[in-house]
Image 1 (tube, rainbow, N blue to C red):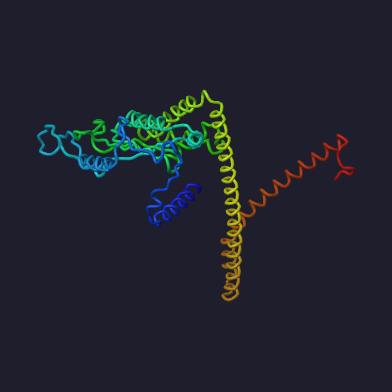
Image 2: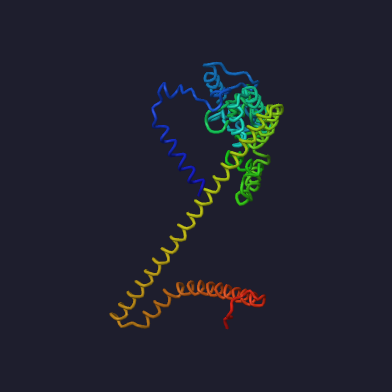
Length: 370
């Protein structure tokens, strides 16, 4: 239910954003979330930055050159000889997303505001994302890594292809098709991080490992976005330690960011619990309304059956119809009445035992009920 609600909210925000006319003023807003990073960069796999106007032509050329790959086949003329055959690819370039954790994003913003230069750290992270992605996804050859610092959490977009420069498959074992390794997804990774950091309530954390296991079983390996996210977390932990180890002020900045994030997460889940409780109350009201509607339908059936019997003088048939129509309704209500009676009897027994126990301890009421 929460996922559907978030998707609906995202669709509304997207529709609103698309309705805004982009102007020079909007396109050149000076405020950045990270002063030392700005809007971010697009890097080559070796870490060098694409110059202005270089990235789009590069990707267009790659997309034009990688429209197919060559595969060995013995099908066609019946000779049994292997030959190369072109296999067309609809979109040869794929893009994935790797984010930093919400906690680390808040810490980095606090450090940036305190005057730390995060540009070298983030560049090293971008190179790490590209390198580790190729290791985690056996079908991938990374072409570029984009660093987005001014939208949502700090995140990276590795763009990759499964085709080599000489139009062969990066992983020949896949033969035909992509055989794309399953992804964990940003949402599941975020929850796993919260669970590891100890901020996620237990009721939300029970099935997370099961979800990760299910997605890993599809391809027989851990999702590459999850693996690379783990590397990013370790690298950032070390980078923050290195930045703050000699400064008590910066250590205080990190502690304050941790405390603020903990309060934010607690308030968020308390609000969600309240919302779910209200939704449950609404569901109970719907159930009561349905019960009343069902009772009205039964009442109308009884009335119509009696009127028909009086008109047609077929009382035995009317009685049979009434029994057939009312019996399931009566049985269900009797079952509920039995459960209610059992619960009330148990409550009365416990209350009586409590009164008797208090009387024995000379702490009970002056008069005992029979």
